[in-house]
Image (cartoon, rainbow, N blue to C red; front, side, top):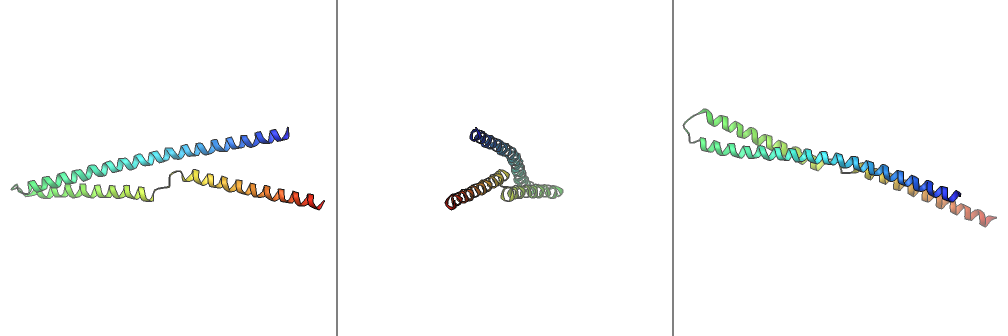
Amino acid sequence: MGLRKSVFGVASSLVGLTRTRLELLALEAADEKARLLKLLGLSFAALLFLTLAVLVATVTIAVAFWPTEDRYLALGLLAAFYGIAGVVLLLVVRHGLIYGPTPFSATLEELGRDAELLDRVRDAQGDDDEAAVRRREEA
């Protein structure tokens, strides 16, 4: 009866451990989804501003042939603003992709700890088995 109880205890522990790790994985997946959606939105905004910069630059060249004075400066400043905004947003996206957190790092860290714990338990069990064999041989 003691062996059966021990096996059920181990099985229960493993189920609990697996459940905890899967919950952590789900939380990290949700965080990763939010991060990717944010980067996608920033990428879209960057492309929008760069497109506007090209459009305004084209209009500026077209207006350069018109005989008024203030239109050049206004359109040129708009093109510069849109271009700078687009480049800054692209740099933010690049930074987020390069230096962002590793996906599922907490889950991997916990699984690594679990593996280390199991290795220690296995080593301790091996040491106990060796000690038991030595005691039998001495007796």
